[in-house]
Length: 359
Length: 150
Ligand SMILES: Nc1nc2c(ncn2[C@@H]2O[C@H](COP(=O)(O)OP(=O)(O)OP(=O)(O)O)[C@@H](O)[C@H]2O)c(=O)[nH]1
Ligand SMILES: [Mg+2]
Image (cartoon, rainbow over the protein chains, first blue to last red):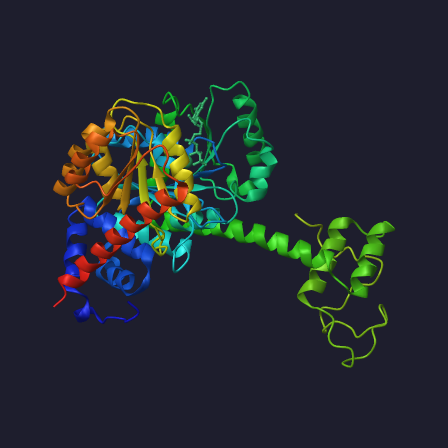
């Protein structure tokens, strides 16, 4: 299994299998998906056989907190797409047990409208047990589903922890599903799932507090210059209410030209990076051991400069940490060697040349 | 009975109910057993049609199927096994759990059911039985790719 085949050495059975996949045969797609999850030489060979032919299908990602109604909503959304005659593949990722490594993959329980429709292919994927990692597997899964000729691919992941990264980079359109009563909305914000939303859904709109959740989300969006065009759509997945509006919103984004879709992916990943960087910077500032930063803190404490200005100064210290002790003359400000020329610590009275943060 | 070695990636097992009976407590418990033994369990609501189970087994590329039967559902299991064969899924192990009268068991075995677990079956016995069938199925699948290699 570890051998790497050059193209002519790929087993004929595998070549035949991929041919069947390309003709849209569900069993061949299913089998290739397993081989890809398994990793190794077969997975690589399949990847090479599929090559650049994939990528025609539109990928719509659904993510959000556990129990928000993602699977139920996908079931209704897929029904809408099928009514238009297009074929669909669904990849539903469920978490594995951290203890046993096993899982109960339950998303299909809520996808019961299409149990006998050959135009809908559903595959459950456990989050663990992938040789190259889950992200790698998801990309390969989407490639195979695309190569099998499905018009639209839906990817379900639970928005907690790492999975938002996968969906952000893999999907053409990202739908973030919320529901009232799942606890603190700010929690969802922290987890990073709002960062990646092209469309926000408040599902379970039949529940009394749904309107308030939707209003909160809209209020949050108005504060963010780069997210004001994100629609907030209320749905009742169990009855289908709002699903047509959701489908229209997805359609509008799916029809964008390829460069614009790529720009959206980049924008989502940029937001995620900004958020991760924010956390990293916070940790580093809290752990900063540098007398020059103390000077900035004191300046802020004594009102000689604003917090935003002090933050700018500390950020510069992070970018240009104090050089090792012997180099340079002791700084007149801190008594320690000074920062590189041009990046000297500002004097204790904060200069006003630094623009306030955020302007 | 010793348990077959864990598969990597984990064994994929469908736990389902066909027929008219809607009591799914038993299948929930078995699903949890199998998950705790490191398997990936695909779980469905009761009342699945045979066509739905075949479609699902195809798409999920399962190694084994556990059918729970408390009343008469086991009587349609031979139809399920035949439909699986027809769909090219002869390698998939089929297990029946629940209440199957002793005099009706031989017919199921003759139809191709790999194991039958009554109400008294231990967790270990169920896990070992499913694991063994799944390992056989995986091996048969892998052989398919080799066989046609010159
Ligand atoms: N009242 C109400 N309940 C809903 C609605 N949509 C889904 N539900 C219920 O919410 C529960 C969870 O639904 P799922 O579709 O499994 O949610 P999910 O987000 O896919 O859950 P996970 O995959 O476990 O994270 C189920 O009991 C659904 O019937 C809705 O619009 N209104
Ligand atoms: Mg779900």
